[in-house]
Image (cartoon, rainbow, N blue to C red; front, side):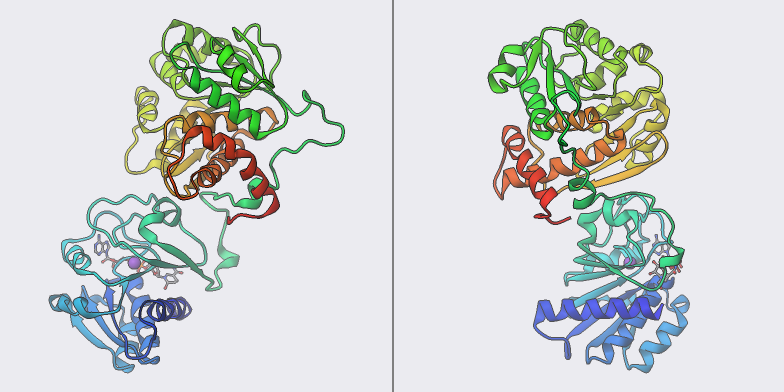
Length: 459
Ligand SMILES: NC(=O)C1=CN([C@@H]2O[C@H](COP(=O)(O)OP(=O)(O)OC[C@H]3O[C@@H](n4cnc5c(N)ncnc54)[C@H](O)[C@@H]3O)[C@@H](O)[C@H]2O)[C@@H](O)CC1
Ligand SMILES: [K+]
């Protein structure tokens, strides 16, 4: 615990210096709950006293505060007050949140919530911002907004799933490494994506790298087909076939593709993307059934998901064991999940995992943090790089990327995760600080692949 608290104190001093230009003589408050999280804060306060910081601990449960931590702070001549004296918070340079840590669930109790409400200074959270669920990142009531979160040993799900609440998450090594098992949720980094992106070898030709089929678009929505195909064309150097009524528009935008009117005429592909702009009528349904019967890995997006939700008999067309990746946003998720008894609540991870298992499909649940769940329980989270990708047609681009990676023979869970990662980067590059559009994201895919492969971008 002292190692943990020392890490907290070090980062608190850095924050003080950053905000105020110094450490000694600055004022700080500790919000101290009844558990070990409060103990960390008290010990950190004791360390900071030695650096000349004025420290006041505000105890939420004075009789249950961490005894050794409290004694250490008192020895270091820190002030200790109860929550009735919350006005000390109005005049401090930094607040350390030690209300609750990993053992807490549910909303903060009213006394803790009132204290949190009063905070205006920058906040360093110990382990996690109090009031945010450690496992799901869900916030149900008042909760701390941290500028920096200092955690120990490894990042917890909350640090990925509620990144905006945590601020910058800092990892402090307290010697837990031998005890840390496999992660519950994987976060891919640049190397996981860049080093694994499909690259042609000397013996490759246009077929050997995998042919992506795209069954998307309609007379009403030809653009969806243009975007999905564009993403697949840009993602890998294999071939792309298009099947559907928007062949003229798609060919005009992407002369390198082979277009046919129907899935049956399309020729062999190693993966399909089906759904964007497809429509939910009979023609769309027939196309989806044909694709699912094709026996190759398939990414089902947008109208494809709505069709599956409406008519679960469509699943019968699917050959057993053939991978399917579903890419719903929240409303599509609800549509397809509710008939299966799966509800999308605050715990998005659990919902995605459950649906993946029930449908025996990879489920990519879109959001500011995108969750990718495999039917065997593997989980991956992709944090967004800003929100510029919240733009029309952005999902079509993602499904095209997934299709191209599936066609290359990649594990479908990783294909979805890597596509999501690259999609975020392409979005960031396309936006470059200003509003962007899906066409611009397609145009940025190659640069994103290049930067990921060359190591030119942050994780
Ligand atoms: N496990 C370890 O190896 C280490 C744990 N450490 C610290 O210990 C923490 C976990 O400590 P604990 O298990 O004692 O528990 P916590 O400190 O997470 O919180 C539980 C306490 O908070 C109170 N509480 C629970 N729900 C509440 C709510 N909704 N509103 C207000 N108060 C509530 C309860 O009275 C309980 O005593 C970690 O987060 C970390 O800060 C560190 O010292 C490093 C080492
Ligand atoms: K905390």
